[in-house]
Structures are given as structure tokens and as C-alpha cells.
Length: 113
Length: 117
Image (cartoon, rainbow over all chains, first blue to last red; front, top):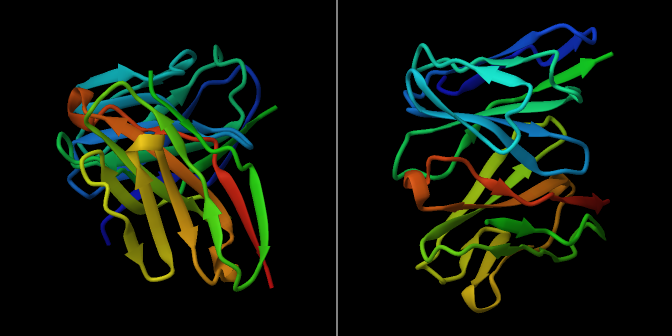
């Protein structure tokens, strides 16, 4: 089945540790995105990538890093510099320029204590 | 700057009632796209509809209908004869044409819809 996978569903880390969230898609989409969702809040854009080996900061990129070495993969690293990392993280993709609806993965709920 | 406002934080209705979720947007662009997504308790966002700024026709899909009014910058969503399975958080979102529309969506804060049996 085609789609977006994020693993794991739940992730727990100690404060001060970096953690990498996985996002893989087999839809052959060019563009991929990372959003953060906090309780009672909408989704906020962290990073996005329109093409392999290129990515752009979104509205809340501080404390996060990404890479796009392969078209199907867009991992997000939550660094120790992120002051409030506990949140629900959603990955999305879209075919690219000219296509606007985004398809979302199931999300990863990260808890940092 | 883009902005999407969903003023209704939570709505609770009894099954079979009709319910309307409000969405007001702000953008300086003449070309833009509006979306509605559904987020059930599982967390994954489900795409419901996309509407571009040049198409003001209302749309109906089964029990769902959408009313787009550029004059009031609104894109409201109505569920007719609501069912318990409609319980979810619903998000309205906006994308303008810069970057070919591939630079992310601006989301409202969502409306939590509770359908009581």
C-alpha cells in the first residue's frame, strides 16, 4: 500500500538527548514536511523540502534539524536545544509544485522528561 | 501574512443534528487554496476538501457541505445529520501560490467536534 510511515508511534527520551523521528513515503512525492502539534493548537511548520538535498526552515525551526538524502525519506532530529520538545509530530508529503493537498503520516508522540 | 481563525474551540451536539464549523482566513494573495482536514482520535490527518480562490461554488459530498464566500473570507463546513463517527478535531488550512504552493499550509487551531449519541 502507498502511504507515509512514521515510527515509532510513541517515543520517550530524557532531557538533553537528541532524538531522530523517522518519516518514509512510497508515494513518489517530491515535497515533504514536518509539523508540530501541541494540545489545543493547530499544526505549525518546522521544516520542508521540495527536492532531494534541499530543505527550508518553517515557522518554528529552532532546535530542529533535517536531512533529505533520499526522495522517500525526511528524518527530523529534535536536538537538546529545543526548549519544549514534548509534542505530537506529523510528517506530510505532496507531489510537488502545482499540487496542494498534503498527505499525512500517523504521527509520532514524543515525550521528553 | 497568512492567518486562519477557527473561533469555535469545541462544539457538542446530539447525534442527527446539523452542525457548522466556521473558518475565517486572511491572505494578501489573489491566488490561494483552502482545505479542511479531519483528525480522529488516532491522530492522523485525513484530507476532506481543497478549494481554490477562483472557485466559489459550494460543494456537497454526502452529508458534508462547504460554503466558500470570498466577500467575508470564510470557508465554512457543515455536517448534516451528524453521526458519532464524525467526532474528531477539524482543521481549516490555507496555502497561497508562492513557491508553487509547496511551502506548507497555515492551519487554524482546530474545532473539536463531539457528537453525543
